[in-house]
Image (cartoon, rainbow over all chains, first blue to last red; front, side, top):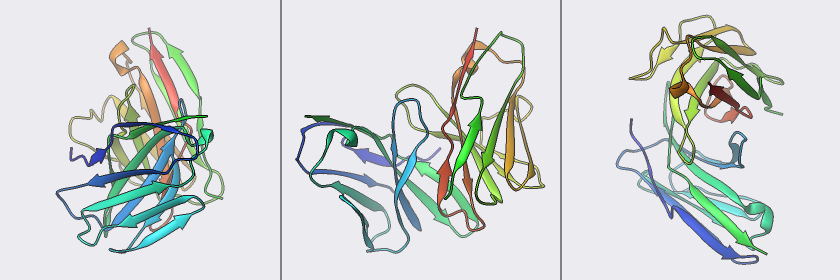
Length: 112
Length: 115
C-alpha cells in the first residue's frame, strides 16, 4: 500500500536540544496525525491537524499541516529523556475514507 | 477519555491452533475499528477495517478466512487468527474511532508468538 516518506529515520540528540521531523507524500491528505510509540506498546496520539496551513501545539510539541496538504512536520522543543521513542506520522484521506497511511517512523534517542 | 484496551497482551500458541484477540473501547462508542499488524522495527500495516454490524473490509493481500474479524457491538471487535503459523507471529494492534473516526486511538497491542 501507499506509504509516506518520513525523515529522518533516526536521531540521536542531547537532552535540551530541539528536534524536527517531517513527512511528505505524493498524495493529498485531509488530516495529518502524529503518534508516539514506546517499545511493546500501541501508538499514542500526540497531535491531529485538520486544515492546510494549520499550526498546532501540545506542550513542547508543535506540528504543522503543509499548505499543499502533502506534508507535515513535528517539532519537539527542549527534549527530555522521556521523549525517547518512535514517532510516526499518519495521513488520512478524509470523507468516508478513515484509513490511516503511516510513515516508517523516526526513532528518537535522547542522551541525558 | 478515548481509552482502548486489548486482551490478551501476550499469547503463545502452537502452530495450527486459533487465537482470538479482543479490542474494546472503554469510554466511547466506536463505530469503526481498525486492525493493524506490526513487524519488528517496521511501521503499522492496516489489515482490515471493521464497522459495527457489518462485514469487515480487508486490505489487499490479507486473507479474510485466516483473519476473522467480528464487530458485534459499538465497544468490542475481535480478531481471530485461524490455523496460526510461525509467520503469523507479530504485534497486532487495534484502533478505534468515534463517529467521525478522524482521530484514531490505539490499543496497547497483542504480541502473538506461534511456535
